[in-house]
View 1 (cartoon, rainbow, N blue to C red):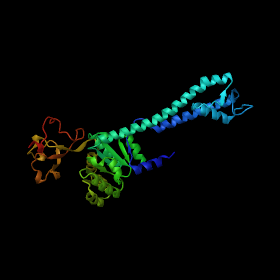
View 2: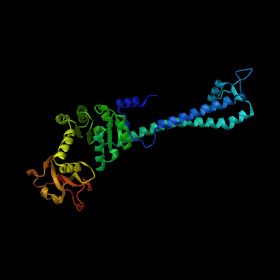
View 3: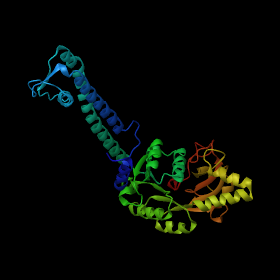
View 4: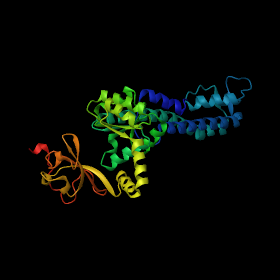
Length: 368
């Protein structure tokens, strides 16, 4: 039987889809049933051998002796219901043992074999059905390449902001990532994200967003190129370990590049120069506590007003897919279709207007 490493290696080359399984693996159940069947077989052999004087071997005249090999032979043909009849119980107690002990063991043995076969076939069928149903529902989902520290944090942020867990797909070649993602209730495509077939199995062509967070910049660049070829419209966010690689990732098709080393280094420097400023920055980066950076639609009542005059602390305005700082003269007056990047208490939903404005209409270009 192939070991776990070889199975995972084979899965890596084929880009197999792995959905989180709510019950134990069918192979675990198979192993238990095989052990039970083996136990029945060995127990029956011992039972027949210890009572061998009550049996007669028709192929071994004139003494009709039954030895250990005969006991094994009789047990296998009896439990499998073949029953050639060359060895048979002749003593009354041996016949009673066959009727009340070996016959129930024969039934249990057959039930185990048939049940195991049906279980394996049924589990494979269920898995194929689940994967097919999952693929049918896939679309407008998020693909996350790499389930390390950055990937897990990205998933947590998405889920905390309302993303459905079933609409997130993880792509990672490691067994650890497979186990952790399944424990988190996420679908996994086991394989190398630089391979086109692996990304195709993850449904990249139909994804709205792709987040690339492997630990190597060269892998991130190649994955970004492949994703962009498969889906020209997907919004791609890539992580870069070194700032010098960020322009290359953008040229490869990434819409946004986050440089992890520079971001951490800047936070460390700010914390050293000004502990209070570092604390505020850490607060903004921590989800669910204190302050939160969020993006929301502009309300009808806010059209024509200055960003500084709104209840929210506006730090940027998104207009025509371009980001302007709140003090930029271009966005002195807010217009329909603008989106606001604001700082607000973390307890408020990032995509909702502030309390008290829930009944107001959003100011979109479609209203014109």
